[in-house]
Length: 112
Length: 115
Image (cartoon, rainbow over all chains, first blue to last red):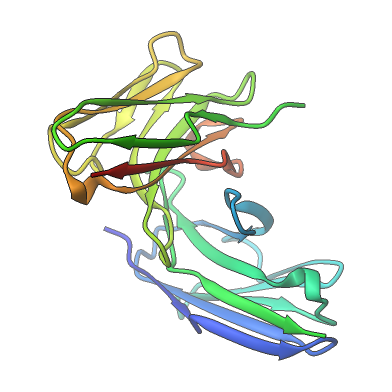
């Protein structure tokens, strides 16, 4: 089955700095790569996603890059704010299989 | 509109008892997923449905776990003869389309504690 590794497990940055979280996966048939943000006491919420026919996608301060050859993708958050502090999960999906495999999460702390 | 609703929010049960966890997905969402999330880890797949049909139950740990979605809407995850190792956060998610081509919308989960 699919194997997803996420790094780092914790990340602390100063407000205004950038944060980068990376995931690697094993199944070359995977074709959908969402990122979720989980706040305390809540379920994960989608923040951005990318499909395999695209190399990069941006949404305001958040961007995701995908390297299908190397089987890795990254989440980039620029101009971080304290409210960005949360646990971030990458996920990988082969849309033919129908189920997502999640990384183990990155706890991001943005210090004011 | 309303999000994915799970009940109960917390469940404490004694070892050996059966429990039923309920998920009410977003109206009109075709697919419904059950995940289990241990502290400090990502959600781990258990099973999923398209409409009322269970598509994949490969993540269910053993035959004490079962799930149903009889009318293609509300789903129940049942754990029989609970054991302490079953203690975890159980999360339900729904998505608008089949095949995972649309994002998952998660509920706030049911925290199960087996004493």
